[in-house]
Image (cartoon, rainbow, N blue to C red; front, top):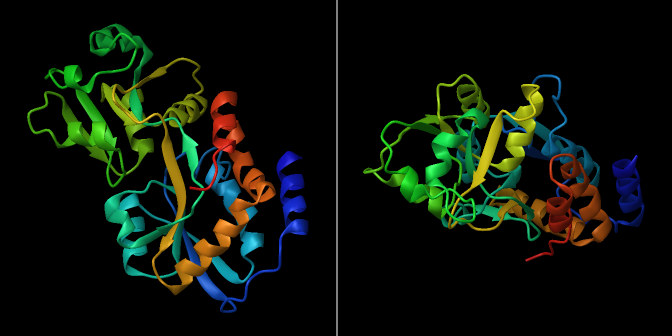
Length: 279
C-alpha cells in the first residue's frame, strides 16, 4: 500500500500541468535489463522502471505514452535521431550529452563490479586487493579466463580502459543484454562478467539460488552509479524533462518514484538513494 498512497498524495498536491501540445506522442524505450525492466518470466512487469512508469504516466497526462522494447544500441540511436523518445534510468556521459537531455535528480546505486560463480572464489582471490576490491590490472594478466560485458552500455573509466586494452589477457564476449551474460555465466561458458550488484540479486531470484554468484567491487571505481531519466534533445524532450524535474524536485513525487527500488536495494543503499538531491 505504500507506493499507491505516496502517488495519491502527490497527485493531490501536484500543481496543474503546464500547457503543452495536446496529445503529443511520447515513446518510452525499455530493454532486457532486469531488474530495471523485467520483460518475461514470473517477475515480468515487476522491474523498478516498469513500476516507475506506472507512477509517472498519470503525472504526464498531456502526452500519449507508448512503451517500445529494443536493444541498448537501438535505444540510443532513436534518442539521437528522433524527438519524443525517452528512457527511464540511464547513465550520462559526454557523448550522450550531445543529443540527449537528462533529469536533474539521479538515482544512485552501487557501481559495476565483477560477478563470478561462488564456486570459483579461490580462482579470483589473487586478483583482490587488501580491501577486497578486484584489481583489473591483475585480472588483465590472465590468459586462461573468459569474461563478458553488455554492448552499448556505459561502464565508466576503470572498466572501459580494461575493455579497450588490446594487451589484456582474458578473452571478452559481448552480448546485447545482461540476461545473456548471466545465462552464460550460469552455464559455465564465461568465468566472469561485468554487472551491477542489483542484477546479482535478481538473477539469484530468477535461478532460485541463494549463493551462486558473487560480485566484487572494482578497485578505482566511482563509489556510485547514477541513472537519469533521459529524453531526446528536441521540443518534446525538453517539455518532458522540464515537467519531470518539477515532479522529482517535490519530496512526495521523489518518494513515489523511488519506492519501486526498495525491493532491489539493501536498506543502506536505498536510504542513500532516497537522500539524493537535484544536481
